[in-house]
Length: 314
Figure 1: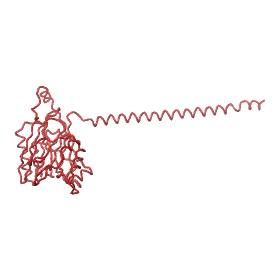
Figure 2: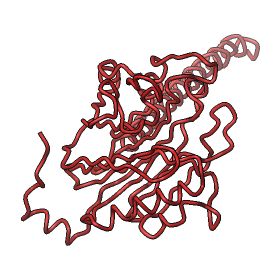
Figure 3: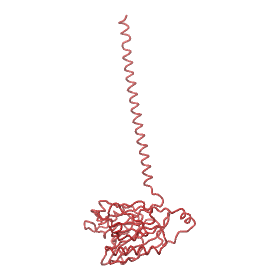
Figure 4: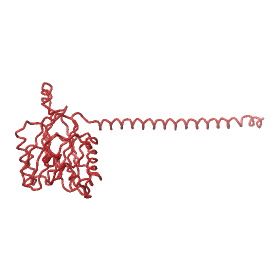
């Protein structure tokens, strides 16, 4: 009787055990699938948040303008090769809204311009500010040329700077949706005394003009900072923004010859030296970039609402 009972009840626990094992396996599989789905969902959400944050970071704020300055060394690179095309490629990488160039013309002989301006505009959208060059086929004023992408030109002035070498500066007043901006593009001399005189000439010019946000940028040929700098007088009007990395010579940058001075003090938000393999070959200088933000004061905003735009050049 006992043996008969064991034969009838023995297989039942084994079947139950098999069923339980199957249920546990299914439960584990379901949990793994749910965990994996949760991980994928979290990753997708994180990616969406990251993409949204990146979009917000890359979207320009109102009034932001990228300035750049570049001494192109007459399109002769550190490899001694004349190659205007790679200069255009470097400029295209700057994404500048306003660009100041130095040494755009041959210095002797016909002094003709060295860049293909039509190609530059196709590749970058930058148009030259119209000026009266020294030579009929020249592109600059004492080698200085200024380019812009948007905005309106209100006035253009070309001034000769004192010193042993012939030097000059371009002063252009722009009007943007966020307000006016004065750009002074210059290439100062090699001699310390000349640079001091040239800085004083810029200040004298500014004192006779209406005050507005102003940026002086270019190859100012001064590597000293502080009390020993030939540019000290500029601090009577400007705040200097010195690059954290020097821009000359391009292959092994040691000297910060390319400078940005700005007024008011909070106009420039950031300043960088654009150090790329191509830029190191294209010229003996590296280009610099400055991000500025035109943010008028509340009283200026109220005045702008009732005022008309300044007269523009056609």
